[in-house]
Amino acid sequence: MTPERRSDGKRSRVDPPGSADSANVAGAASPSPGRPRDTRIDAAIITATREMIVETGYSGLSLSAIAARAGTTTAAIYRRWAGKAQLVHEAVLAAEEVPAPDGSGDIRADIRALVATVREMFDSPEVRLALPGLIADTVADPQVHSMMIARLAGNLGAFETRFGQERRGDDELPMLAEVVAGTAIFRILIRRDATLDDAWVDEMTAMITERWPPTAR
Image 1 (tube, rainbow, N blue to C red):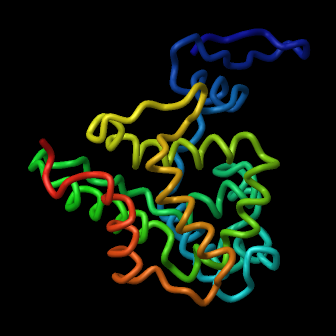
Image 2 (tube, rainbow, N blue to C red; image 1 turned 180 degrees about the vertical axis):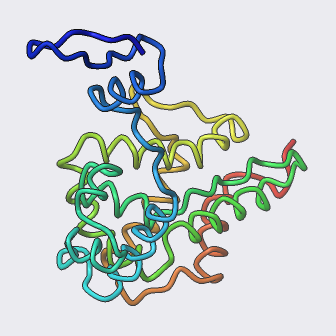
C-alpha cells in the first residue's frame, strides 16, 4: 500500500493494482460471471409441471403455480424457458430417441419398434392432457414449433434410409413419421379415452408393413 495525501492534509492508503484489497474493490465495481444453473431447480420445475398438468390441464396451468409447487420463482422459470409452451414441451414429451433399425432385415420388427416408441412418447396422462393446448400454442410459437419438429425428426428420421423413403420438397419429417406420430396424436385428440395399447401397435404395424414382405430382399 502507498500513502496518498488527502485534502485535509492527512495521509490515506491507496492500494496498488494487483493487491487483494484492490481486487475486491474492482470485483464490487464490475459484475461477476453468472452462476451456473442449479439443476435441482430445473428438476423441481419439470416435476411440478408434470404433476400440475394432470391436476389442472394445460389451460389451467400457470407459471406462478408451477413456481410455488417447485419452491422457486417465476423469474427462475423465465431464465430457463421462454414461456409455458416451451416448458411443457420439455416436461411432457420424452427425449428418448427411437432406436435405429438394427439391420436384421426384419422390416416388420423394425417398424413395430418404431410404432412402440411413438406410443411411449405420447401415451402418458400428462401428454394426453397437454397435447391439445400445446399443439395450439406450438402453431403460434415458431420456436416451440421448431423444437417439436426437431424432436420428432431426430427420433424418427433414422427410418428414412432404412425404407428407401425420400422427403417431399421442404418436408421436415419423413412420411413414415407423419403417419405413425400423426395417427397417435389424432387418436389422442379425437378419442381421449382411447388407449395406445399393444393392440394399437400391432394394428399400426400390420397396416404399414402390408406393402413389404416379412423380410427385406
